[in-house]
Length: 513
Image 1 (cartoon, helix red, strand yellow):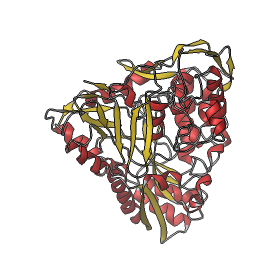
Image 2 (spheres, helix red, strand yellow; image 1 turned 180 degrees about the vertical axis):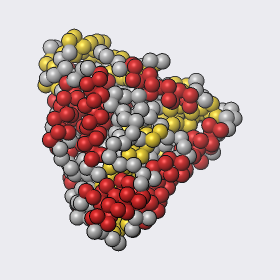
Image 3 (spheres, one colour; image 1 turned 30 degrees about the vertical axis):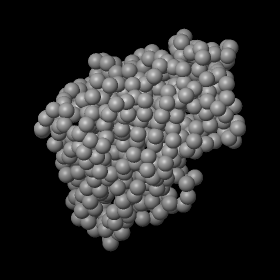
């Protein structure tokens, strides 16, 4: 399959210098064969079709089969067949043949892992919250118990990289799923992987050996993941020797970069994150696009990059991340211009506007929110900053989770993506309103370009499509692009970290150095 190596090589160049550094000693190395990692919140939904992602994808990687997995080399990210398949081969642009490894067995007496399980799992995803990943899927044809063909409805070369390697590509036991009503939350109906999972809400996730696993054993027998919601608390736990690996904030990354004592390493998963200030276009206070454009002009992004992120992140000009086709080098419809912002507020006839800005309760986001609060005060908008824990934050714009979406005004949001622009753009189509398109706008042109971008294979034409899609988003006035954060992990030099391009850790692929 095409690897888009030219664009991803540029991406790797921006992070390789950090990833090669070693830094500050921070407590003991991995003790024995126990790996200690941090979770930033509780796992809420393990079902691949209805998850939020992040730590839930990390759990799936340990307990469920995947047909493919990410690789990382000098020329960028790629893919390879996983242990779970004897063969995974793209026969032509619309047919991917697979043969499962012999002897794979589901837990709980649910029998062997079969090609029918793959068919059930992938075709089920077409009507799930993550259906965008499977938009190019027509069906899965079963050849025999272990073999089949994934049939696409159109050529889509990144399908293996974007869908099969990522969380939505998890395979479930059809028999076990039917026993539980075809949906589940925090307990896998059946597993087939090196680890089994035990959750203690508010405290930890514990991974121990799956007694029915016959495949290769991971480097660590046990993985302990305490819930530590604050990045600073996790950094302190690492420095006290209580964790072997944790994500670090921007100021700590800057501090370690400037001071490199022995015993600790930094690994960068990628810069495939995009952060923005979002605005609800349907809220009465923000329904006037002139007000939204005033906010765009009022926010000083450079102050956020320096004041909240210590200059460690790349400035964003859209949802397409560094090194990918479609990345822009500037905004088109706004720039930092407080005077222009005040003129637009006067044009709208608005004064004394009160807004609520919701954000995850992390140091960098709170600092960014406070800078935005000060910026908007300068044009006569009074902003209340409302910090939230991860659970209520990720539910607030989803209509299926309650009525909070009706009250949303402003929020700071960061999405992770995979190494192709298609993935980032799917969350803002018309059918995502009330799911992940919290800004709640629709555009026939955007939806049409989204379909064209999936089918297009010419790199320059794809680039132009994704640039235009970001222009449409920006023109709504509902976005202020902020940054692309690196997924940086501090860890002991006794541990070799395995991280996806979007930053999810894969514990079973960690190694002992």
